[in-house]
Image (cartoon, rainbow, N blue to C red; front, side):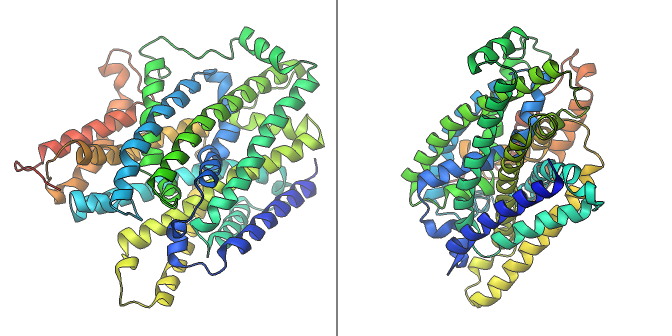
Amino acid sequence: MSPKTILVAFFAYTALLFFITWLTARKATSRGFYIGNKASPWFVVSYGMIGASLSGVTFMSVPGWVGDTQFSYFLVVLGYLLGYTVIATVLLPLYYRLNLTSIYSYLGTRFGFWSYKTGAFYFLLSRIIGASLRMFLVVNVLQVFVFDAWHIPFAVTVMIFIVLILLYTFKGGIKTIIWTDMVQTTFMILAVVLSVYLISKNMNLGIVDLFHKASDNGLTRIFNTDWSDKRFFLKQFLSGMFITIVMTGLDQEMMQKNLSCRNLRDAQKNMFTFSGVLVLVNFIFLFLGATLFMYADFKGIKIPARSDDLFPLIAIDYLGPLAGLIFIIGLISAAYPSADGALTSLTTSFCIDFLGLPQKENMQEKKKERIRYLVHIAFALILLVVIILFRSVNDRAVIDKLFTVAGYTYGPLLGLYAFGLFTRKPVRDKIVPVIAIISPLVCYLLSNYSVLIFGGYKFGFELLILNGFITFAGLLLVSRKNSWTA
């Protein structure tokens, strides 16, 4: 597949997104940018959130991960269901009751100024790193298969991608994103299903036969019963639950879409529908991974050093032009939701949580809009720099790295919200940032020396739970004696 064909597909798809932007961003206001005027149809939000949750990481990293971890990731996915139930029944009612635009303002109401800023800061840090990891995967593929052929530097490729995202989210914000996410989810799922079909056709095997062959090869193994292993089944399930709570329920990007629904009931319908479909879609991605490894063995293809590269290698170089085109469109569809939503939510959080723009009633709307535009551009530049830096240190499956980072950056948020929801104690607000810094540091030391300290035990994604627990315990130590009352 030629670089020109890939580039034409990229820009044709981008043009479609700009058309949707034009339709949705007309007469957009700040309220439309932040929460879509609270008029988003729940089923559109639900369907679009699948693409936003999966992103380029799931599209490439999950299939590539199957070679090392088989289907053990599916236990994490099953844990998602319990996590989404907590979000729908505990967090969403809280956010709607308080009529929040930024979910971190709850921490200000519950604890005080410094707790509020700490929560918002950890979101910004988490989202910048997470979005950069996701975008890196996609941009790197475009670099290898398109821009390297024309000797264009990686930094320029990243800049093109960031500028395009910046342009189509600039005005409409969340009002635009819920509709573009719907289109992108459709293309992403279509790409995976068609890729599985084309591989099965090339191997002269039906879908059921492919699954049986994957099972015979040990690729579909789900349960790991070694308690000291990172993939121990109970660790995987509980980690999935808490990963969902923090990376969706305590994440401004994901909750911003839910808060754009008309009411709490619609937001809950969105969450339950979305969670069920997401389990099925993740299973399809795992099955795709198994078929990729079997096809590589069937054709004698050498597995790349970085497992994330297996899908693009086979799709573009071995399955023919149609498969390559389908892959590129699917990849682009997976890339945009992870970038546009991140950029919009970062802008929203900073404008509300740190600049307090909506509360500045004496400031003219035009001035607020100009400030929001500048913040939007600033975060685009930050993402640009972080993606370029990440390329020099990427050495393993991105989804593994993404969840590891989440364990450190979302842990303090988990502890803060758990303490706020399940106790009635006030805290010494000024000490909260110190606790939120100490907790990840303690977790880092424990993770590095766990084999020595705990007799061979290795921390996996459950590090997130430990981080939240340490933060909770620290807040308990600095809590005041008198009870807090709402």
